[in-house]
Length: 461
Image 1 (cartoon, rainbow, N blue to C red):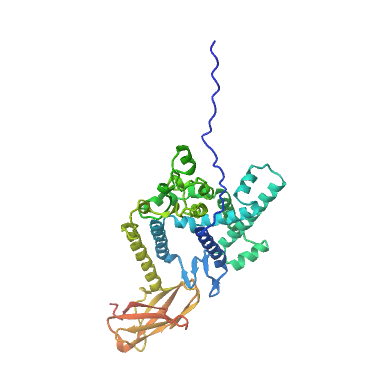
Image 2: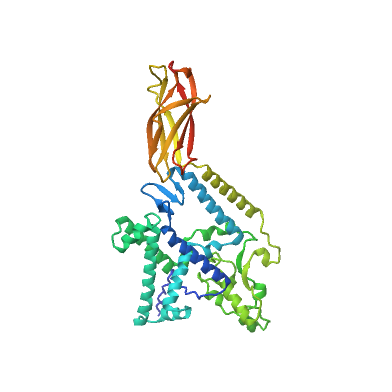
């Protein structure tokens, strides 16, 4: 009689990734990272409180469609400036990536900065890596509940503060924080504060390296900017292999690597740098610092894991200037120069003149001729400006403008009818008039715009 076949074993095609509990590393690169991240966090939380001419230093005023950046105020018509600014930012990232690898990811990326801040709070509440691993394996009890609860409470407070600070770039901080303390936030302000606070809590507290591995597109296309002279963090196999444990099995002379695995324990994305360059590596240099410490302990020279390039690791000379880096630098400098020139030439006042085609010319009793125009002003400045109108013929003769001055409010566009009067002795078939408008305020002496307009005489020519 034939035996029944054994039941099939179910195999799951999905396995949750093990939570990474990185060990805290110490060294020159980690000191530099801590300084960089503290500076960036400080600027992020401090800038909304800084004032410039009565309004926040950086303020995205969406209801009025105005972007205040120090003394510069941008409006939707300045989209070309924003485009060039984004181009400068992109080329800066490409240039630094080509030269220094993923230094942005390891030292300045917002995901990395906030993740490190959350790791500092986690270490404060739960202890070092060994203590956190033990706490993960423990069953829930009062001690575990207290440590985990205090950690999440700190995370929640910090995340909410981050959300409010982010919204403070759109709603002045001197308004949103008092309203938050009094529980009087408006609907949308409350929603976006909670949304960005929850996003910070989730990304930096739970997802962490998963964002870098699976969500960030930069990790996927960074290799397109690399070449053989790009600085990367690499393990030097020629010096480290065979490792101490493998050398004992093979009966060979061991390399400098003692196989302590500390480089893996300190890695925030959980990779083994000894397996070669991997796209998950964010170039935080934690493995460099911890390996240098081990080399100091065992009396070996530093640099078993270090910043290097493919050419350097093969003993070839390193080139800082090569075609790709020169190309990136050229485009970066050109776009930066273009941005500076546009900002220098930019005027916060837009001015145009339209002639009234229904009434071409009017003749007064004394023989003076008048043409009616529509003067359109757009004041993109953050102050009200009053402009004086000056009209002259090509021979320098001053014409009368009625009205002679026009006031334009901040962020407003006005269309005002203006009459230009030509003296009787200057009447011709047609002439060109130079119209200039200049701000009368002492603080804006250079705010002036000129236009040439046609002046039509009595015969309709």
